[in-house]
Length: 419
Ligand SMILES: *Cc1c(COP(=O)(O)O)cnc(C)c1O
Image (cartoon, rainbow, N blue to C red; front, side, top):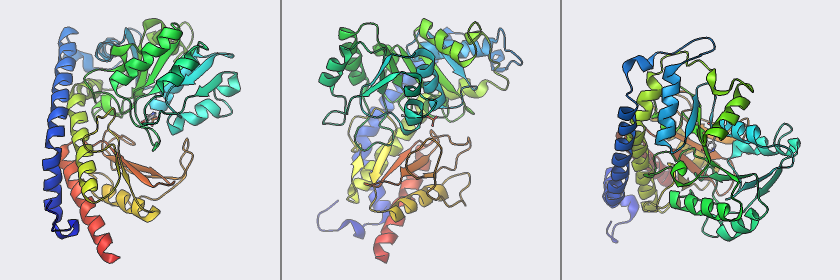
């Protein structure tokens, strides 16, 4: 953009076009990763001989449910584990993670969070009246490093206490104090922990991270990885559910926590049409690529408008979350309103700040999604706390995201003119 013209003098179209030009080299990298992951996923489908009769569900106990078992084998292969639990009976990412924590930790065990406070909804899992601490589990948290990543030296010191479990969150979540962790950084954490404490279980919260890079935490030594099917790996098609992937013995124990000791993975009917889980997994690398391109475009556009964005347009990404700094509660509400109005479902709804179970501050959420609460479909959230960051993630197609970004620029221009 030439220095003689101020940003306000450009048309909305011109700004988005310019942002796209700036983002092009980043788009290219994203497409390469999506291609790599698409091939990886396709190979797994071929190796496991997925067939159309796998798309029928079972009922009752779900004994001998081959559709479910094959989907779990696919997840294990694709996410670098020995075994997996992929169930719509696991309601959400929080449920999957809480199952790993509560199923594997006992009184007196030490749980170490390696890079800052875990995602908001895990706060009560740790600190609540029925949470880990109430059950006698000891919890320690290492502050993020100066660059918002992981403070490896502090992890090394803490690992000498031989924690039962080390928790690593790949995504930044709603935090402005930390960033997402890259796979090579997760690998470093795993190596440091294992050097001082070989038997510690490394649990990774993989929410929003799946298919963002070419490899997954399970490929670099994580023992257990959990996430949500209405985020990245569901590809926008899965109607709900969660997954846990990792070492077989650990997956079995977590399964016995979810169902019952002695039953474990062997029960749990897939009930309805399983096609959405298979097809969603197949689509996921592409959909994540689309969402990432939208996040990068958002960063590029809002940088041109002089806003702080996290991550920067060309910063390496470990998740699909894009944060954009707003100046006030009103601006957050405007951002949410625009995203909602440009959604295919419930476009007529006006989002408002409200108290939500599991979250500490009031939050506003914009999501006009086909699957309720799905955040691989476009959604925007913001907690009501300074420095007023809007967090945007997901989007099934780049074209939709481009449209939303255009509407956002337009709305913020009008706001500037009113003032
Ligand atoms: C979404 C999310 C969770 C919790 O997932 P829900 O499905 O909303 O319960 C946990 N950790 C991170 C980093 C997330 O993004």
